[in-house]
Image (cartoon, rainbow, N blue to C red; front, side, top):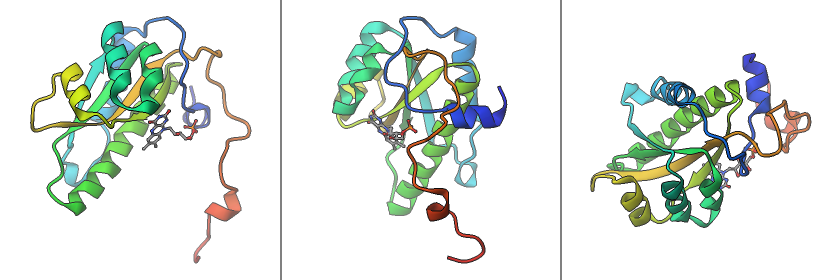
Length: 171
Ligand SMILES: Cc1cc2nc3c(=O)[nH]c(=O)nc-3n(C[C@H](O)[C@H](O)[C@H](O)COP(=O)(O)O)c2cc1C
């Protein structure tokens, strides 16, 4: 798939076919995250891949907006050390976003849909994922083949108008 097609085809998928994603495709997606840029190349992330149906079900309980993770073929949990201060917290969130987008675009390229989920219940996430005490789960990325058919470029994305968002040279 062309890069532009991948960018325009990505959207949050919250309903998935009951079909596994091949292991080498999951590895490609994880590798895209590993290669993501980060501030001073500190690479603050750990990625925990979950494919077990019962484990996905337990993971879906970490947040009321995570219910759909139960029906995904897989999920990647983004874990990190708690930030030391506000500056590190901001950079961590930025860098996790970069890794997330890299993985989501790699997924589209393979025809795999993805969806974000926040994580509220850290104890539940810790229990399901076996995280050590000095790590927390920042986000989940659900993965699988979209139930409503293959990913295609979104013609009319739900976005603010280009001219409202973009300024040339000066505000
Ligand atoms: C930081 C972040 C957290 C999100 N958390 C959730 C979530 O908990 N549950 C969910 O269903 N979608 C979540 N989303 C998905 C957004 O709602 C979605 O990206 C946005 O509505 C735009 O839709 P699109 O991705 O289909 O273009 C999250 C997205 C981001 C960037």
